[in-house]
Structure formats: structure tokens, C-alpha cells
Amino acid sequence: MVAKISMMAGAVVLALGLTSPMVANAVCIDEPCPPPKPAAGAGWRSANFPAPNGGVVAYRIMGNNPACASYDGRNCLWGMKVSQIDFDRVRPLVCGANHRAAWGVTGYEDRRHWCNLARRVVSTD
Image (cartoon, rainbow, N blue to C red; front, side, top):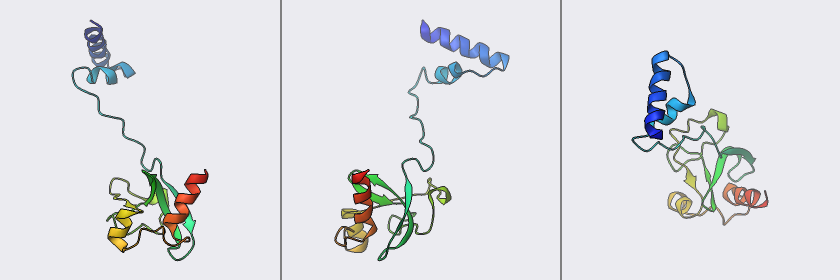
């Protein structure tokens, strides 16, 4: 009964040309609503890391490992701030096993590598 009322209310709102949150809920009654899409760049931050892999890079934690923003899953987008990245194209490079597959090292062997530094910064936050 509630669903029919919501659908009817939604139809009335549409017929009158009004907008209401009820309309959005009415659309999802007969089928599952899609999950809300997170804001572009949500959860990502950028930091300026020292050499050997130095410069500004956007990263986030995925599982227990840092991951840098990348368009090809191999090369971090060095020099790009979060606001400059097209997150619809991002295929992150995740430190650990994925980083080893791409570069032959996990990123944790060198204390100054961005993987190691990013993991330490997040674990102390």
C-alpha cells in the first residue's frame, strides 16, 4: 500500500512539474536502486614524496596497501593533484604484489619509497 501511495505521489509531483525527494525514491520501488556514486576523488589525497620516486602523487589506501592514481595500472600520475585527475579513467597501481608485478619490487624494500612512506603516514593518522 505504501509503495502505491509513493508511486501515486510521485506521479502527481511529476504531473505538476514539481521536484521532490519522493520522486527519486519512487523510481527505485520496482527494482533495486543503484548504489550512490562517490564523489570524484573521494578517499584520495596527494602528497609530495622525496626521491627515489619523488614529487606530488595522488594516493589512497586499498586494503592494507597504498595505491597511486594511474591511468594504466603501472605508472603513477606524478605531478598531478587530486583535482586534476579524471577518476573515471583511474586504474590504481597498488603497492605490494601488484607493484612487484609491474616493477619487480613491492615498494616496501626502500624506507624512502612512496609506498613505504604513504603506508606509514596513514597508519599514524
